[in-house]
Length: 133
Image 1 (cartoon, rainbow, N blue to C red):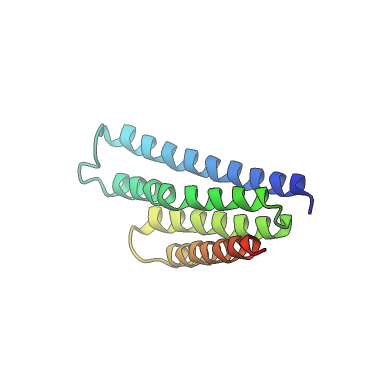
Image 2: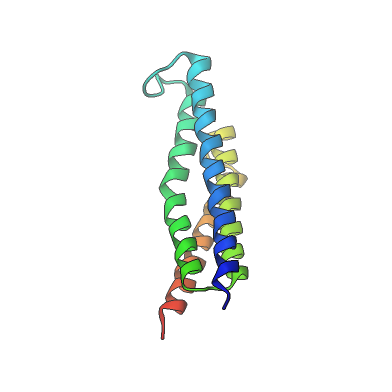
């Protein structure tokens, strides 16, 4: 297996996830400036949702990116890496949109959660497959 192509695939999705985290952090900063809040959320619902969307992404993205990187190291198929990256990225974007818009239960948020879990399951199963001799 050509680990170079796997590495390129993992690099693409790692880069996109980093951009997503940057965008979500900028949305927090924008809400802080708009509402003149330095620490916490001071009860501002829009700021609380922005903080939570960023926080939730930071809870899930690093593990997924690490999984993508390990898949690249073991020479996993670029297709598998792209599939995992797409599932995870789509899930995180939808979750952030759903959480930022409603703050509660919404179709984008629920879909994002499911896609994130599917990505985690796919990543873990694929990693364990490549761990077998």
